[in-house]
View (cartoon, rainbow, N blue to C red):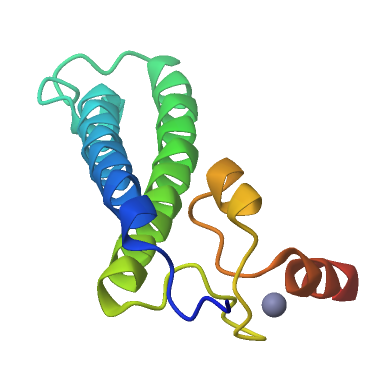
Length: 123
Ligand SMILES: [Zn+2]
């Protein structure tokens, strides 16, 4: 029997898992924004000499972390969309079904191992 669609009984728990992950990522994003010294309302009032460079370091770290979270969030969102439109579990390049063992480890995988390897070796 050849599978033409990713089994729905595997998609349900995955969808639930990704939704939880999405919420968690959004929560982290909000926490991060709150910790950014550039977002502190009293920043202008107590700007002593030397504190500025410390704050911009902190701010840079926040930006790096924020970009990481945003790209994970994007991946999760994309995966949820693929679950909905039925393309989940198939390689975006060769359209073969992606090994389920691989998807267990990396549920947001868009490519099968063969295609991913060929792409990373091109870089
Ligand atoms: Zn492939």
